[in-house]
Image (cartoon, rainbow, N blue to C red):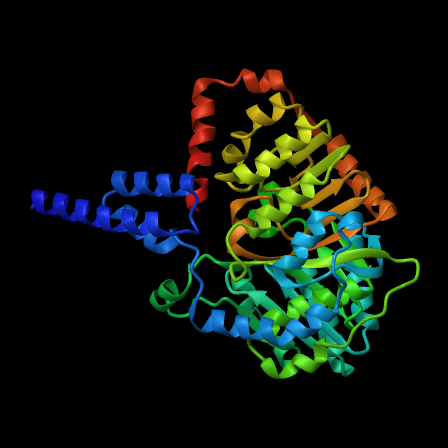
Length: 471
């Protein structure tokens, strides 16, 4: 029996290893890691590979999303102009190549006080809505924030505003069964659950089961959008209260970029209700004193590592300064190389991350990058005032990239994300001041401290970084 199992394991190992080697979507390090796992974990490694080895996305969910993207394509292409590369740089051009959103002109933005001020401002906009409210949240909790937003949508639906609410099946699983979600439906709010698991066996064959819609989109009347890192939840975030408060950043945008974000929402919504396309296609005029900005939507329907390439290009435009704020820092080689290149080229690079992370995997994996970053002169600061959940890159005091995307492998390939790339000194200065507030509440990680880490700690950190590409 033992001989049979050994031969079976070797046969399966050879077959699956050939599969791993044939996949162009896997880089060399990921292929090597999977082959080691398949060899070291008889049968279990095969099961793991079948579940999470490939970022496959097919079946009815994929076909519906592809159809919605195709339906919105003319409006997307009309929503912005081709990038002016001499002015806005290659990052803008690359962002446009992802899903067609060009640079828009004439936008305004307001950095909101977090967290209560941000939610109060959003509900104020919802209460003033006259045509439509569209929201998509990865996490919507049955807490004070969750109920307040729901009540605002119920009020709007009651006065004839077309309201749509979409949530992720896993991130908001408890809210789906809540009394508040039921009341929203009864009040006439259109509701939809994205990426439901359904039959688990069928789901596994159609798509990787842990693909998630991580977007945080709020659009009012097609011309105002709220974009940032905050889910529809209190900063106390009861599911992980010991890491609270969640420290987020939110901004309110007016102008054509809000129309682009509405179209990005439509690409998810129309997958379930394709008859509503006309509601999303009306363009929005810009303001004479506004600034250029463009929406960016990434996800498993776009292609592996596209988001990582965009992060690398944004960072690569730096001449003087890059400040990165992210809760989950597992950048992979491409983005890490871009950060190192910026530092070696003479830019001041600052990385601000949480000191305590809610992910036991991410914390050591993040720190595996510290030795090379600190030796290159990157300033690393670990925020102490809760879980820093803001996702921001500012470059040279002129460019801001912010939204839902983390600087990790999940956001780079597994999650649907939404972000905004903009060029404006005044708004970027406000965002940078917020980052400086984070820095003032952080502890600096010095090169001497990192060099003093024990061998055991280095092995621990690097072990988690090694398996990162597999997850």
